[in-house]
Amino acid sequence: MFIQAMKNLITILGPTATGKTKLATALAATIGGEIISADSRQVYRGMDIGTGKDLKDYVFNGVKVPYHLIDIVDPGYEYNIFEYQKYFTEAFNDVVKRDKIPILTGGSGLYLDAVLNGYKLTSVPEDSFLRKQLNRLTDDELREKLKSYGNLHNTTDLIDRNRIIRAIEIKEYEKLNPDKVIDMPDIDAVIFGISYERQEIRQRITDRLVYRLNHGMIEEVEHLLQTGLLPEQLTFYGLEYKWLTLYVTGRIGYDEMFSSLNTAIHQFAKRQMTWYRRMEKKGTKIYWIDGAIPEENKLNAVLKVLATILY
Image (cartoon, rainbow, N blue to C red; front, side, top):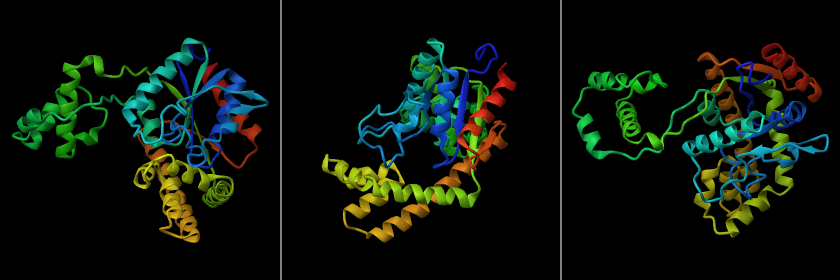
């Protein structure tokens, strides 16, 4: 029924510390789904506490729900959005082929957007010869050339000259290398979001940070440094690793680390919500669920919407 209804993906998004994984797991266990992560950091092995991996959340009533795109690369590797699309496509096709329902879950706005809006990305090298030719054209001539390739996914590519040139460079590469373009599936998603009142999410973030600091997050960073990762490499992996690296290497004290990290995560959550609101303004429908209601009620709210849309 899910495929017949023309919806082929369920998505659960929301800012950090809203319980997305728990809801996705309960839903997957209920309807026969598997989770595909949309988190830019949980792809890394051994980076568990700082990335909020919480693998225990993938268990519902004693049953472990299958998940994808978690623990797939080693620390030190700089994973990117192009690779995410590739791995997502493989996971999505695998789940659908086995007649399971894919449930995309995470808070990384760019990764979510790349799937839900079908970003057509390629790992395109710079073409110095082409750029030299394009730089001879006026902005208007560049815009007309870019429009000649067909519909544009991102109209902001028409504003900045450098972005216009890059967009043309990508289009030319795709023409010459069609085998290197990711064939993304056509996604028609039902999207749910979990939200809390601002003060409540702030408290949840602070409480979670305290818990993680007391349950191994500092030791995790120390271990990663001991394995050979450089301090400047760890800063690539986000807020927790940036501030904890400064702390464990003695550059700042505990109080400064905690205060700065706590504030930074609050600001990150705000940026996540801004991203989701921008998605809505561009036409993405998100069914928002009050994070404060009991877990069972959240699941029932999702099932009610799905029953209305899918059956």
